[in-house]
Length: 116
Image 1 (cartoon, rainbow, N blue to C red):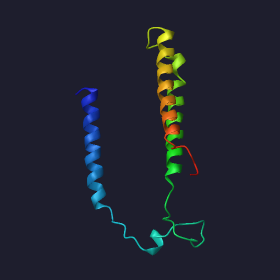
Image 2: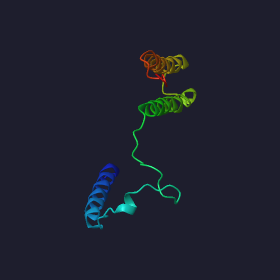
Image 3: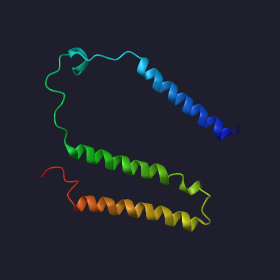
Image 4: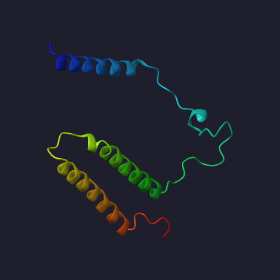
């Protein structure tokens, strides 16, 4: 057997074993203590299931998007897959332009306005 077949076989066997074992493990029965929120040992002040503002989610997604973009663009100067440094610069510029256009679109649509 070659390496690819061995890895696929081990992965499939491990997945099957974990799926079978998960049925044999004891089922957790929820009760009041397990379902109540934990606030540093104190009794919860209010409900933990309050509505969540979608603005926080949008800001978090934008942060992750630009963080990922930085992580992808940082090693570009050391990349030697492209033929010339000009091609590397053009690809990086294309990615930055696309992300900037998306940010401008989000801004113009009012998605970044905090208070209405």
